[in-house]
Image (cartoon, rainbow, N blue to C red):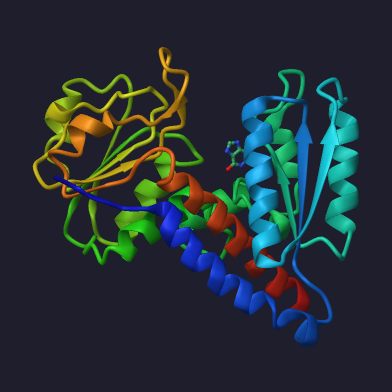
Length: 285
Ligand code: GUN
């Protein structure tokens, strides 16, 4: 029976530490970190994510401005808004909640965010910095996954890791971060043949494919560490569920994360870390 790795608990501890650090900023730097969040439309999932970010800012003492725009906003107007925030010296971090409506080119919008304020780490230059081992902003979910593994003192070096999913936001960067910690990494995806044979050799299995209960017990090695990045709705219960069949896989794994309460809280926690990092860089410039 696996030990549950709680992102919620780790995030709570880390947020308390950040709160302590932030409480010294007003006297040291005469202002507080400030995160601007742009929310386009009224997608319930996006609203819930943005509310989570507002709550975390409030807990830590980071200033937060959420700018809400209707889903028929013109791309140009969104780009103009980002330009204003890029030039606003009181703003340290800018985040545009995804997904955006179809008539807007998401890449163009993300690229328009000043890379030093891109707290999501989605700007091409920040994504590339991971691969080139250059200074940059590491995206929140991959960073949170590594922090979770470190929190259980799991020795990543020398281990076989398997990542299911190859997105630029999670699959690819987390694979690179694991590789940099000297794991041997296999990247799989929905078209991988013989997937279970590959995943069942992994000491660390990261599921980021976006399919409910995709990872079944037969795909998991005895004693593996299983990290579930999925955020899906169970079609029957309509409840939030991950990519891993938690109830079955927990019997085989040594450590496992759960959805909700696993990677999700760590993503928000790392967003707060990135905002503080951007602030400190900004005030020391
Ligand atoms: N939509 C779902 N997750 C995220 C995230 O981490 N950042 C942004 N900007 N949009 C998201």
